[in-house]
Image (spheres, one colour):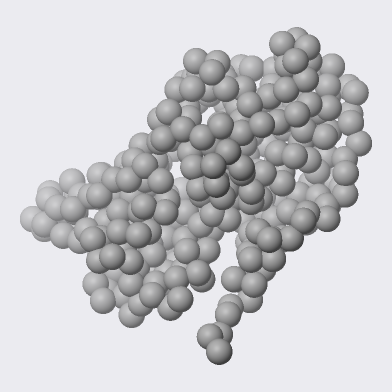
Length: 288
């Protein structure tokens, strides 16, 4: 019988079981602070960039994962129904929010000052960026300095792509071979490139990469754990239009979930206890 990891069991249980988290009590004060259009409709649409395990699993129009659980609890506190829409690429998520096609994204999406020109972030995740590589790490990838000349998959438009582009230039400046950058619009396609030997590594957030490794039947492992890999302390969170009154409302709603234990329950359910943030806050991220 094939050995199954504890994390795989945890994630599988989270995906297949009916959520037992307690219902939240509507907060009338926060509901009254929502934009008038949302109060009138009683609905909000949260946009996502497709599957981002274990935060988001998208199957058709159905969203499951930590993000879905958190969104449902936030909706109960605010007294509104939150539905979900998927688009292709992070740039489409951010531009869609800025253009008011969607009210917000629960994320988590990397919070960097450059992204705050049109958006604000409500941070609820502490993340790290590492590499998913083939078992045995045949290319000996250890950190960002070891990827010159390698085939590195990244998410198109994401912060990891910017870091890899900058590192490739550094490789060339040092007389080394540039990185063969392979940009994809979603996580599953990116990790498949590594499994199919079309890329030497996938450079992305540690939480989803951990999920992919644990469900790869021994084909993958993580590399570069515990290294800065070109990033400062990395916060991720929900995204709202710049200066929208929805930002502080979401911040307070998630703080309520943190105080009453629901946030911790959701994060642990999906194997994300190492990504819990100490204090929910707005625009906490640092510049790359």
